[in-house]
Length: 68
Image (cartoon, one colour):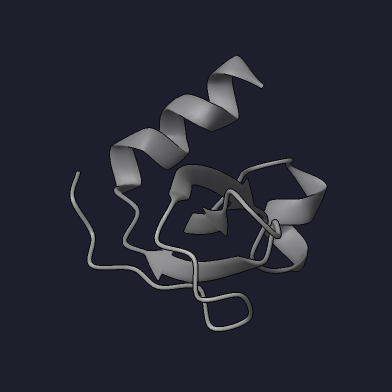
């Protein structure tokens, strides 16, 4: 994936892409269902990280519920 990314802190162009999932509201916390999905971009030089919210699909949320 070729992003035209420049770190806003150190101006480096090298980065790493990652993902993070989190619970959204009270019911999703009770049932341990991760309803929110984020993509991260981390600068490889200074480790500054930005998170971007990504769309989630209902099927993946249901699968997370049953598999824990």
